[in-house]
Length: 505
Image 1 (cartoon, helix red, strand yellow):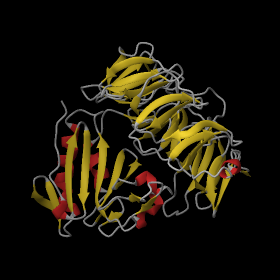
Image 2 (cartoon, rainbow, N blue to C red):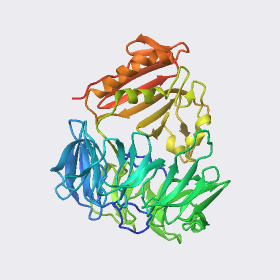
Image 3 (tube, rainbow, N blue to C red):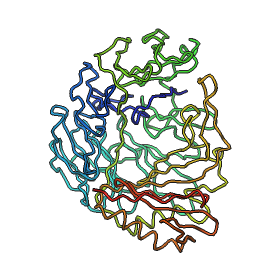
C-alpha cells in the first residue's frame, strides 16, 4: 500500500539521498541539504535538514537540483545549467552546460556543452574525459559506474575515469544503485517474443538470466539484497544468484494489527501510517515514534522527515521533535536529470524517430476509442495518486509521453479517504515532449521542418495555423518553448489548437 502526498511538493515521487559508501543499503542517497521554497517566498533556498539551518536563503529563481555529495545544479536564465558546491552555494563552480546529471559521491558528473559531446567532469568542473561522439546519452554515476547508450541504441557501462568497462551490448541497462549488481536486458533476436533479463556484476559478468514471462520485476534494482518480482500471483524475491529467497522486510504483520487504514514502509524499516485523515509513524514493533497528527510525512534520510500540516512543511526527527524553525511550502528531493544527453542531434533521425510514433488513427499505441481501462497496466493500485489529474505521464527513452483523457483519471470519494478510477475516460490527445535545450537554438525548428515536409507520407495535410489534419479527422501540431519541443496528437480535429512556437533567448 502507498502513502499519498496531496501537497504540491516538487517532484516528490522518490527520495534522492547522498550515497552511503560501498555497502548494500536500502538508501541509495542520504540527504543532508534540501532545496526548499520558504513560506511566503517564490525563490528557492537551501535547508540543512540535520541542523534545521537555512544556508542559502532565497538564493535562486529556479529550483536547485537535489544536493548529492554537496554538489547541485540550477537552470540559469539562459536555459543552460550551472553547477554549485554547497560550501559556497551562490557562486557557480562551472556552468553553461546544455545537459547535466547530478554528481555522485565519487565526485564526478556527466554533462555536455550546448552542441558538444558528453564529458565526465570532477567537482571543479574540469574534464576528466570526453566520451566518444557516438555516445548519445549517459546516466549519473552510482557506485562508480554509469550506463551509456550509443548511436545504435545499445547500452554499456563506464567507470569514473570515463573508460568503457562493459561494452554496449544490452538493449536496456539499469544503474548499480543499491549494491554491486545491475539488471540488464540482452539484445532480442528478430521474431523472438520472449524477453529475458540478466543480472550482471560490475565487471559485466552475468550472474544469471531469467525470463520476463516467468518473473515480472516490481523494480529493476536489488534493495536489501533482493530483487522483488511477481511470479504467477505471488510476490517473490530473487537473490543475486537468481534463487528465490524469503522477503527480508516482510515484517508488516505488527503494523496491520494496529488498526491503521493504510501504511508504507520506510527504507530504514519504520512504517508511516494513516488513521482517519492523519499520518504518523511507528517502528516495526508497532511502537509510536511520531504522533498520528500530520497531513503527511515524507522520509528524507531515515533520521529526518518532512512533516506536513495545513499545507506547511517543517523538519522533524525520528521521534517527532522539530529540527530548526524553517517553514516551507515546496521541496525538491527527487532526481529530474538522471541522464545527460550530448549537445547535438541529427534532425533527420530525430524526425524519423518521432514519426514512427503515430499514424492516421493512433499515437503511442492508443486511438480515439482507447479508455483508461485499456491502459490500466500503467496505473498504481492507489487511485488517490491520480485524483484531480486528467493525464498519465510515461518517460520513454529521450521522450516524455503524456496521455490526456476527457475526464480526470480518478475521483476522490466524498470522505476524501479513497478514490475511484474513471475507467471509462477516453484518450483525447497524446503529447510527446522532447527536451532540446542541450542543442543549439535552431534545432527545434530544424526537426519540425523535417517532420512537416514528410507528414504527407503519414496521411496528414496542412489545415491552418500549423495544424495538420488526416482523412480520419485526427490532427497533429508541432511546437516548442524554452527548449522543449512538443508533438501533440489530437484524436479529434475540432479539439486541436495552434501550437506555441517561442524561440529560446
